[in-house]
Image (cartoon, rainbow, N blue to C red; front, side, top):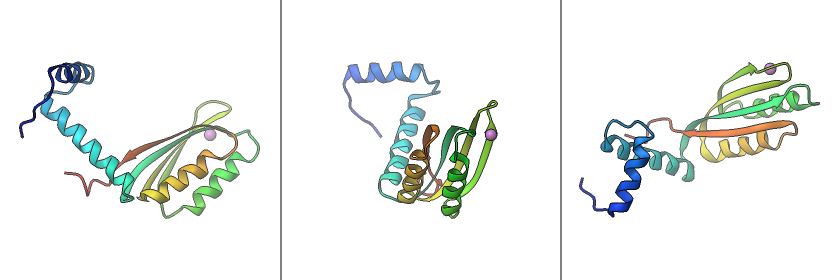
Length: 132
Ligand code: NI
């Protein structure tokens, strides 16, 4: 594959690569192509995999009960949950998910809207089947 691009764009891209430790430009381009394909899986509602990270104070009234209840309602999407006691108050949960992207987004909204949650993030990954 050969592509044409502006010199300024190539310079900016090479500066970007310098900070990310890619061994070659080819590896960097392949990585960006795969990233685009994974994003497309999420947009098109394909079967995907990912991880939801939550941080919350377990002393806050009802938060633990609500989080457990949401996860029980979405048991088919959840592969596993890892709980880390960060300190006396704060907990981190990493919820590994796999299933239809739209269903995972609904789960994310439910978790995000739980009162007492300090942080929610989603790492959108792939099952690997749709990406070479
Ligand atoms: Ni904890």
